[in-house]
Image (cartoon, rainbow, N blue to C red; front, side):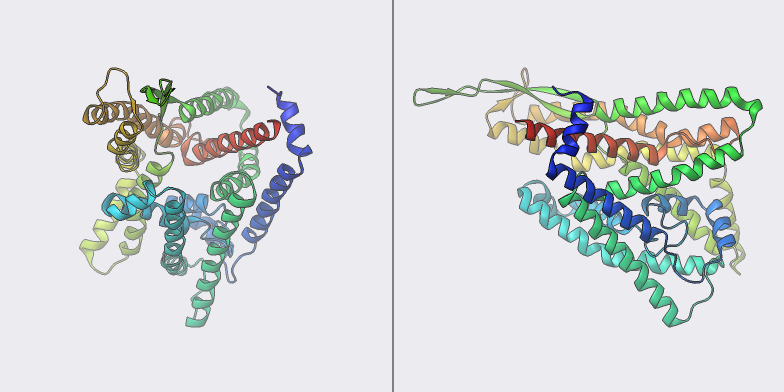
Amino acid sequence: MPSFTQKIALLFADAQLRGRLLFVFGALAVFRVLAAIPIPGIDAAQLATFFNSNQFFGLLNLFSGGGLSNLSIVMLGVGPYITASIIMQLLTLMVPSLKALYQEEGEAGRKRFSQYSRLLTLPVALIQGISFLLILQREAVLPALGAFGFIANLLMIVAGSLLLMWIGELISEYGLGNGVSILIFAGIVARLPRDFSQLLFSFDATQLPLYLAFAVAAVAVVAAVVFITEAERPVPVTYAKRVRGMKFFGGQSTYLPLRLNQAGVIPIIFALSLLLIPQMFASFFQTSSHLWLANLAHAILGGLQNLGLYGTLYFIFVFFFTYFYTAGTFDPHMIAENLQKNGAFIPGVRPGMSTQEYLGKVITRITFVGALFLGIIAVLPIAMQSLTGITTLALGGTALLIVVQVILDLARRIDAQISIREY
């Protein structure tokens, strides 16, 4: 087994691996240049005030790779593509033909499924682009645009989103790792220098023990995220012996790895959307001429600004959506059926319905731990800011999960490529 330094040396020594790595860096450089080109007519002061007071756009800025915070031509980022992919995943729960296409028709079926997600990205990007431009005009971040200016800006940002989707696909095909995840990762990492500079400018020497405690807690949280992300529940599987002519086949034992966190960051995205979209609509109607509608909007905004209530609802929604998403993507019936077709069984469990029930119980139990973990990680930034009173100390959340998962996935892919070349 080669050491870490030997792996790094092999990574740069191999021409194909070096080319893949350089392609990723080149694609990310193009992405960061595009994210720095703003659309015309922005009021920078109003933009900063708007982002500081709107959590929903802070989330969307995360998935735009930081392009939304300065209203760049790629301000929508890969958000429309992610939204389209989530919609397609949800449709598999309601449309049996889509579920069969995604789960049963192999690589060709998954390619068609991905193509449907790409086609759905265009209308989603148009809807999001129109909504963003109207909201930004309402908040005086952008000046009132005529029909031509509005359509020109809309086409510009929709084209930017589709371009980023294409760059992500190119990274997946010619680079290393999942292209869309790497683009989001690059946007998060690009914000780190700014966040550290804000922390340094607001540094208070009297709170040094608090900063040290935060650093220790940050290391512990990252270690916990890595541990839970990599954690699996192995279900033992044995293949029955079969005789063909004079030869015996089967008889070996293996295991079925069930991940503790089957859902990834999808439940957090669902929960944030459910909590933050009402805030966006309430902000529209708080100046309504109808008194009851304005009062309702103020009540919604006031209630969700209570950190205790917001954090509790956030945790409950993340917990619920973890079970919901896992139930939609993990099918015990299909797994039990495949095991039976291949002459495999779980020791001590009868094939067929008993295996399905057993797998259902196991996934329900481990999903409880995964849902609890995701809920805690999601509300951790809120809890830290409530306890310390320092807004620059944000620990946990969607960004941390994405960064850890992308790094682990990239490390696994690089290790696999190096292992192939060794053999």
